[in-house]
Amino acid sequence: MSEIFELFVTRARDVLIAEAALRLGLGLKGRGAEQAMPCPHCGGKDRFALNTAKNKWNCRGGSVGGNDAIGMAAHILGLDVARRPEFLESCGAVLGEAVPDGAEQLTAERRAEIQADTEARASKSEREAATRAAEADAFRDKELKKCRGIYEAARPGTTNAARYVYARSGLLIDLALVHCRAMRFEPRLTYWHGKDERDKPRDIWCGPAMVLPFVNSDGQLIGIHQTWIDLERGPKFRPQLICPDKREPLPSKKMRGTKKGGLIPVAGEMSATRWVVGEGFENVAAWFAAQLAEDRPLARPTFYAAAGDIGNLAGAAARTGRFAHPSNVKFDVKRVARPVMMPSPDPDPGRLGEGFPLGTHVRELLFLGDGDSEPVWTAAHMARAEARAELIAPGIDVMTVWPPRGHDWAEVIAMALRGEAA
Image (cartoon, rainbow, N blue to C red; front, side, top):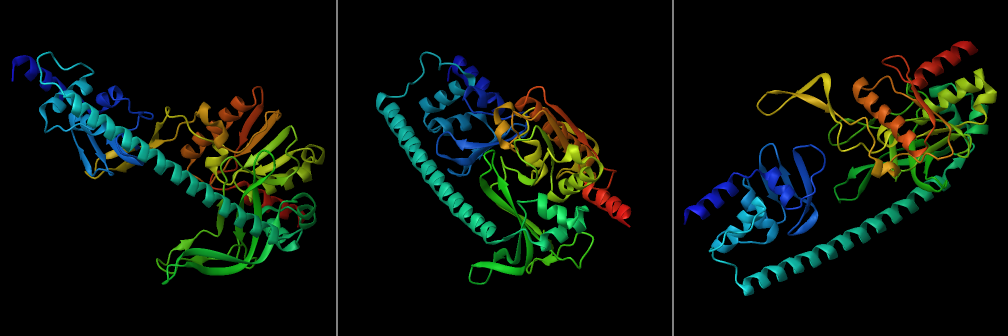
C-alpha cells in the first residue's frame, strides 16, 4: 500500500463515530450519548444504536456492531470491508472524501448489486413500517372501543363516586354531582394485570371504581382514567392491590386508551377563558371546592381540568437544555458518581400538540404544582408547562401555585375545608 493510501486509511481509522454519524446523515437527537434509531440499512424502528461516549455502535437486525466508524459506514452503505475497494469506499465515507486516484475501484456490476440490495431493503422496511402502522391503528381502534364501552356502561351522577371525591378533596357531594358531569361510577370494575397459566389476561380485583374520560380539544373521548375506591381505607380511600407473582403493590389508578393530547374535565366548560389545570382529578377538584367557597363568581366561569400525569401537563421537552441536579447523583458500573440529569425546562416547539389541549382563546391559566414529588424534577416540568402555554396562546397570563413541601393540594385543601365545616 502506498504512503498516500496508508495515510488515507489511518485518517479514517481516527474518525470518531459521532463525527462519522453526521457525515453519514444519521439524525442524532440532542446531546445524549445514547442514540437509537431505525437502521439506515435494514430498517426497523430502533434497532440501530450508537454511543458517542463509548465510541460504539450496533445493529440488532444484522447482529453486528463495533467500535470503529469504518465498520459502521460499511454496514450502513451495504459495503463489504473484506473487499479492498469497498473497504476504501467505507474509509472515504467516514472522511467525507473521495478515494484517492489510483485505488482499485468498485466494478459497475458490484455497484449495481449494492444498489439493488439497498433498494430491496428499503422496500422491505417500508412494507414492515406500513404493517406496524396498520397494526397500531387497529389496536388503538380496539382499545378506544373498550374505553367507550367501560365509560358508557358506568353510571353518571351517582353519590358513590362523589363520596370518594369529597373524602379526597373536600368538594361537597351535592356540588360534585352538579358540577363534575364527566364523573362516572362502576360498582364492579375488573382490574386486569399480567397473564394467567393459560397466557390469558388475569383479573386480580373487581370492585367499585370512578371512571373519568380523557377528551381531545373537540371534547371527544380518546381514553379513560380508572380509580378503584375503598371508602373504608383512608387516607387515599383506595384498595391495596398486590401483584400475585411479585407480591408488590400495584397502582390503584389506571389509564386506558390515549392520554397524550387529552385532558380530564373536572368542572366548567372548555370555552372558558380562565383555566385551572393540575395532574390529578382530586387536586383540581380540591382547588375547585376552595374557590367555590371563597369566590364563587370567579369559580363558576372557570374551566377546571386534570392532565392525568405531569408529562401530559408539561408537554414534550426540547432536545437541548437538560441540566444536572444540584445534589442528586447516581453511580455507574464502576461506582463513579455521575450527576442525575433533569429534563429540559424548555418545550419542543415542534411537538406542542403532545401535551394537554390548551385552547388559544385561554387568557388566564393557573397550574397546580405538586409538593410531594421530587422538587427539582417537578419544577423543570412546570416551567416547561408555562413556556408551552405561552407558545400556544401568546399573551396568556400563566403561573403555578405550589402546596407546602411534602403535600398535594387535595390533602391541604380537604383538611382545611373539613376543619371549617367542623
